[in-house]
Image (cartoon, rainbow, N blue to C red; front, top):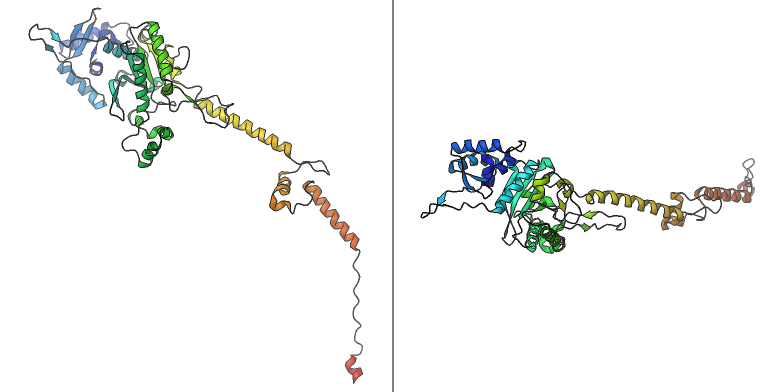
Length: 415
């Protein structure tokens, strides 16, 4: 309970029930626990909403205890809600619980209730600093690897922002995902500075976002979810249409650069921000673990993991590329086979060795009759040699010189 209030600062018993005891049937045990913590001066009621729900916050003592519990885990504790009163009226100051803050906490509670994230895996108002110094703050960040969502940034919109403002937020998340860390090596920095799209050739592992968040397990940048609350279906439809059209260059996949454009239908999501949308009312009515999420660029609603997956992404690309390459090799082999020479003497096709021998320049001059296969050429050579030998006839015997008789030679006759 203290941990949840330390993270979300303020919450109702209903929200705390879903954040801490989602398996319970109702929030009675949660309310009893709050009363017990109040007796120990760890929590207090800050206000009672119009619907009579109490809003609980930590006291200074409870805030210190929450820091002790969350600090070793590296979890940021929200600021203490101090009790300040108007000196004239005695009314508690700054005790408003705006609807946006309530919607953020309720969204986290519904995610946790569906098993998407532990209460300690949530963080609020997390800043993402851009190159120009602007800080884009996410309303909520959830890390739920056990649910197939290693990380997701959530923007909760109660239609207080123009649709194009949400497009600007999406653009900033896309820009943040393309930043390099300050200690990036000089070669990578020079590459990125060489041209605007050079960052796309830098692996995600070398980018800033991977220093902050774990790998998503999917292609692309960190996914972003827009959760709409307290609005009409028509306004949601209009906002989503603007996000799809004006934000297409940030969320949409591209075609793969392939040698087989007709055979490869897969899409390249590596530089895109996966964007899903839903409403808080759907989360509360059906549960965050059901098919209430819609991925921009798709029709219909899916479960969160199905919406974030890319069935037409890299896995399909690898399969299509491999099949297209195999088909291309078969086609090339068939075309080559169709060009293979046939021996004019026996009708057999040339072997690869004979074909090469008759076509490669350095061997063609010694290949003999290039219109016959190797065996026929060998037979021809043997026949020609036999014919030549037969035409030459048997060799004539050579006469020996007359032997010297009695050792008489012309020297003696001369004498």
